Length: 313
Image 1 (cartoon, rainbow, N blue to C red):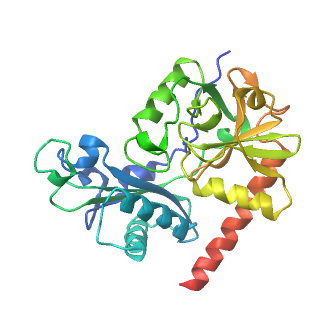
Image 2 (image 1 turned 30 degrees about the vertical axis):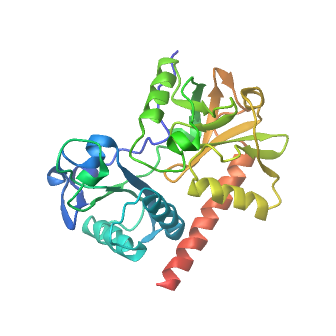
Image 3 (image 1 turned 60 degrees about the vertical axis):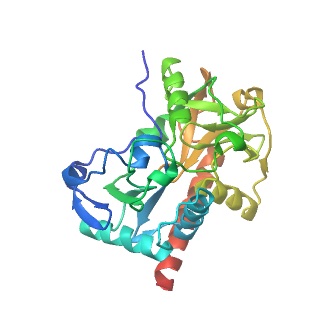
């Protein structure tokens, strides 16, 4: 019997998303009117950065951390949008309010170098200012993700060296990860487990990756992966709660024999891994005991963070 395929971004169906309003360059418009130019540098070249954020009780969790990553990336690629973090917060708040959202909302904020004068690569051809889009959907992770877990396949597509395309950029240029995902699907898995240039386990095509071995939580060194906000929160929570955690090089050998494995990301928080290259991970379906503890700690951290953000407003 074939196991149905799913991904770490599977969400519960919500018909309200067919009628949402979307922020596009200063206007909040119905979904069917939310368009950008075919000359946009993001569409043409993948020249832009994005952030994914979740809305809890009217607050964007870990907003400051997301803005630090976003504006660091924009500065690194010389993309000045003429706005600051509080301006971005206002855009997100207004978009959520236009859709009547206060909870279980997920935002995809996209910023590109904007419309180009001619359909060529040089960034100097983007002469009309940045394109800024915020899509905020009603979005809750599918329950099957926690019950069944994700099936991973290691793939030939790797996370590259920082001087080719640094994985720390949360950029629109995602072809590397798309190719990896296609390779995993062709191997009969849900998503790809990507290695670094030296053959050590790194991330999946969409999320950061952790294993649990003999009571220790392991993740990659971080040298070749996106500096995930959720990844860092998990590492911090382990340190704060006397859970041994190591950022280190490890191979598929250690991953195959892990007691547990899970993925981290803003949307799914911590998603259990069911198997890697056909090898079952753990002794039970869904999350193992360490993953469950981390999920509980993370849920409490979100509640604490949201309360603190609300009090600071």
